[in-house]
Image (cartoon, rainbow, N blue to C red; front, side):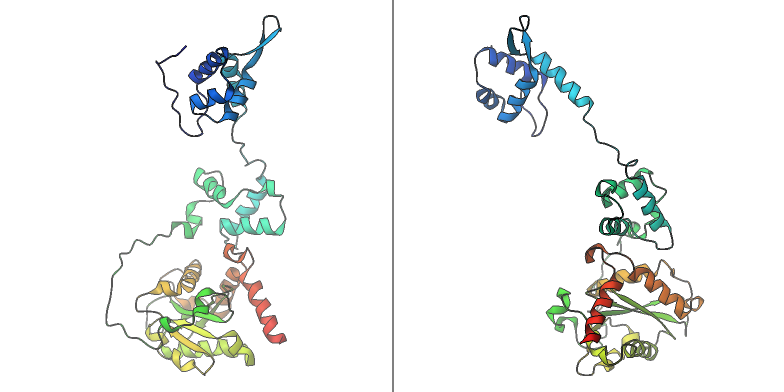
Amino acid sequence: MDNTNYTTEHRKGQHLLSEERHEIEVRLKDGWSIYRIAKQLGRPYNTIKNEVKRGTVLIYNGKQKRYKADAGEQAYHEHRENCRRVNCCLKAARFLAFVVSKVMGDEKWSLDAAFGYALKSNEFRRDEIVCTKTLYNYVDLGLLPIKNIDLPEKLRRNTKAKKSRENKRNLGASIDERPEIVDLRTEFGHWEADTVVGKKDEGEPCVLTLVERMTRMCLWVKAENHTAEAIQAALESVMEYFGEQKNEIFKTITGDNGSEFANLSMLEDGKLKVYFTHPYSSWEKGTNECHNKMLRRFIPKGRSISDYDADDICFFADCFNGLPRKILGYCTPEALFESYLDAIYAA
């Protein structure tokens, strides 16, 4: 019997329709095989096979088995009653409390850092942990005492129109001349440099920020002011701290064309090489720019650097150097940096 009053067209992955179940019942009575029915309906063979198995009941006082569309429909709805996503909030309560303590506490971790640390430290079973995406969903749904304003990176958007500018000075060798191995981040000892200012007053102190590209280790140093001489002195003091091995630790430094780096090329000594980004292309030293945003969590724009001493700046750096990073396999920059230092000083 052919019924032309309905269509059995379906989307991929869609469950069987009631009309299709009646079609199966009719075709089985006509002696069709399961394969032929599946081909007729455009369904996988196993889908029809499993449906026939679920909807087969005993008739004639239990003497004969036959597929019934109504029985298949009833079995389908019974299974759907138990088919739902399980809420993991209760099962992951201890982990969620850990996440809240790390994000809202002094560490100011990101959600992904908390997830990665918990996964790597084995403090929680895997079935007690929810993924980073789920954590963000919980924040959006209000299931955690964390708001989007507590997640600075989530709120950042680059909405500024790009402009091409000309006649910007070039202070030295272009980043185009920098060895390819620096871009690959497979060798230790390549740094990016920048400065962070507070108030734009003459003589106002600033922070010299250095980031090692491979380990993401940041060194933040308070400089006397924003002049080229003060920045040069601060950078030299950092390099001298590492003694005779400084040339193994500082192989290249990449800065921008700001006036504060006018003397940067003077640090070249045959082993250390200095390069400069293209004018108005801060993204070419993006690692350092991202770390500067982290520093802004402690020192907002417009706040005088004079309000912080050198120990405060070092403490801020330690907070982020001890932060597990997904890009580092949830290791900390500090741990990786120390491992390379140990190898250099042991040689």
